[in-house]
Amino acid sequence: MKRLFPAPWLSLALWLLWLLLNLSLSPGNLLLGAVLGVCAPVMMRKLRPLPTRIRRPDMIVRLLFLVLYDVVKSNLAVAWGVLNASHRPPRSAFIKVPLDLHDANGLAALAMICTVVPGTVWSELALDRSILLLHVFDLEDEALFIQHFKATYERPLMEIFE
Image: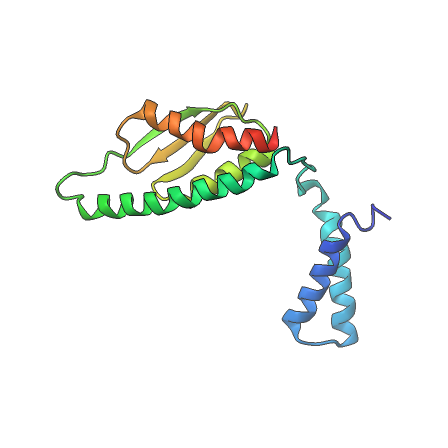
C-alpha cells in the first residue's frame, strides 16, 4: 500500500486541489484528479526529503524570533545603505562561511533564512557541504559577520536537526 500511496495526505490534497482549481465535480475531473493524486507522489518519491527528527522544538521558536528581529534590523540597515549610497557606497562582498551544519533539512532552513534576511544572498554551497559562499550587501568586518552568522543561525539549526 505504501508503494501506491507514499504520501496519502499529499495525494488527497492534490486531488482536492485539482477539483478546486477546475470548479467541477464531473466524472472526468474526479478521475483525472485521482490519477494526478496517485501518480504525482509516486513519481516524485525520490525528491521527498528524508524523515528528520526535531531534537529541540523550543529552539525553533527562539530561532524564529531571532530571524524576525534580524529581518527588521536588516531591512532598516539596507534601506539606510541605499539612501546613503551617494555619501558612503555599500561594501558588498562575497565571503566564505565555514559550515559545521551538514544535515540536508538544516541546510534547507539555512538557505531560506539567508533568502529572507535582507542584505544576504546564499550563492553557493561546496559539494562536501563544508563552505557556504554568501553575498553580503554591506560588510564591515568579515570575521565578526561570520561569527554572528554561525552563532545566530547555524548553531540553533544544529541544535534542532543534529
